[in-house]
Image (cartoon, rainbow, N blue to C red; front, top):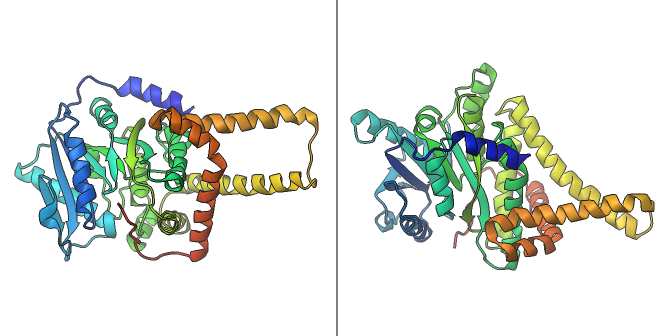
Amino acid sequence: MGELSRRRNYRKHTTEHRDVERMIFQIPTLGNYKTVNRTIEAVRGYALPMKIEFWVIVEEEDKNKQDYECDRVLVVPKEFTCNALYKARALEYARRFRLSLIESGGLPSKYLLLQADDDSTPSKEFLNECLHVEADLIVGTITPRVNGFWNTILDYERSVACATTCNLWTNIGIPIWAHGEALCLSARVDRSIEYSFPTNVEDVYLMHKLASVKIISSEDMIYTHKVALERKYTLYNSTKPVIITPPLTFSDAVKQRRRWEWGHIRVIRGRLLPLSSRLRLSLQYGTGMGVYMIATVGIALHVLGFVSYGPNLTPLTDSTLILWFGVRGYSVGRVKGPKHAIAAMISSYLTVTLNFLVHIIGLVQGDPKKFEVIAKA
């Protein structure tokens, strides 16, 4: 269903040349100039048929401002305030700066904004699709760099999530997940939708909640939902890869997933999005965690002889298992190739077990209440 929705959008919105004059590629970072420079170098080497201007967004305390090999280093002043924190605050400052450039004639109003994290690299295929699909918000498929067996298979789950969840819900305009590893925005979205709160949604209660509750993560998900809630923008989930660095240690994996998990819990508990969005998030979390627990306990009970089923159900269970392996192999293989497709099938249970464990540990540890940084290289 997701692939059918994506192909429909691709046929409907693909054009030979988008009516844009410039692409701005921005990366917010907390001093990771080496990984940022590697990303900029890689994207410069794509030789795309479009002028790309590279921006790096840093805080005043960044001691490496002179080391970024980009067109513009944008420093967020300490005195800048808005109803957003950390990366969202930096992105909002950059957005307002672009508005001032347009007003002064320093930036054409027809541009594309591509933003990435400082540990992610959008592929050439993804950028080419951004230049030919006239959607207002485009996200790619998360694809882990190879960085050891355990680190790589941990983030196979993100490729699977893109294929089985984002590909459907984003392409029908009601997203669940969203990520900022590579997010392409049209100028009209960038000029209209704030990272800062309150939102433009015509819901007085929601506006007050967004103004009074500051989130410390999930800013990309909040932003994508805000774009969708306007009901006038086209969303597109691409199957082209966006390469990311997986967490380099188990501790960092817990730290990363804990940040996401509690950001989502804040969104749901604080009613920071309409009920329909919160229900989709809750259902997706509950299904993933619940099915894992039920299935794992079920295996143990079956092996111990407490649960049994007749031979007439064997074709159903066997076909379900084959489908499980097939979907996971396809989801990873289409962005990583056949070797990783096989690895993803073989390591399926290890992958979901690792992700279950880091989520449970993060849940038990509680709300981090601050933005926890993990190693990038």
